Image (cartoon, rainbow, N blue to C red):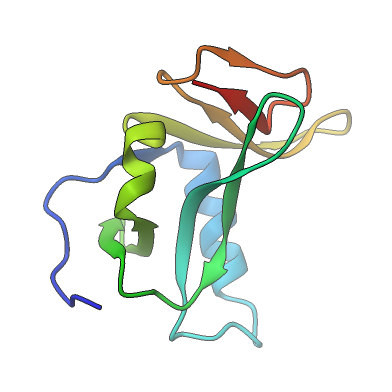
Length: 116
C-alpha cells in the first residue's frame, strides 16, 4: 500500500456528509487505523452498488484527504466514481447518504444502485 496522499480528490462530500462522517469518526469505538472507503461493487437492481464505510486500506487503494477526513478508493473504481458528490440526508422520510454520480447512465429508485 502506498503512503502517498493524492493531490486531487476523486469524489466530493457536502457539508452535511462531512458533519455526519466526523460524528461517526468521533464514536468511542472508532478504529483510527481505518479510512473512509468509497467504492463500488457488482449488484443492485441497476448493476452496480455504491460502497461507503470504514475499512483498512488495501494495496490497490489510492489514499486521499477530504476536509481532514482520511479516505481510500480502489484505483480501478475511479472510472465509475470520479466527480461524484456524496450527501447526507437526515430527514424523517429519507435518512442516509445519497450519491450524485455524473458517470451513471441510469440510477434505480433506491439511489444506491446505478449503471454506466
